[in-house]
Amino acid sequence: MDDRQRLEQMVTEINQLQKQGETIAQQIEQLNASLADIRSAYDAVDNMAGSVGKETLLPIGAGCFVKAELKSEDVIVGVGSSVAIKKTREETLSTLKEDREEVEKLIKTLTEQLENINKYISEKRPEAEKLMRETGVQQ
View (cartoon, rainbow, N blue to C red):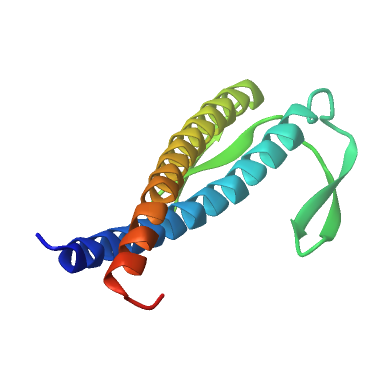
């Protein structure tokens, strides 16, 4: 394989890896948003302890709240496919903790993949630039 073909192959590989890295970065961003949502729900459920019969502010979205009286520490939890089940406060906290750990693990795995991609690109880029100079190809 001549230098020009090798250069084309390297450039194609680097471009594909950059696109893959961008996709992974977007996934990490989405997972971080999910993680923040899980942490917020965990804190809200955790703070419900001992609040039965007390008035509280219930968030309804967009920074809006309604006053509500907590009648139970049970929580209605979505389980997918538009299905929700009633769980105790403790069961909900356990579920949210498991969800948090799973998302954190995914973030860690994707972050490692992104770091490996970036490292590989950093190692290959000087070689590609050298080939560009040697073959007279413009950047």
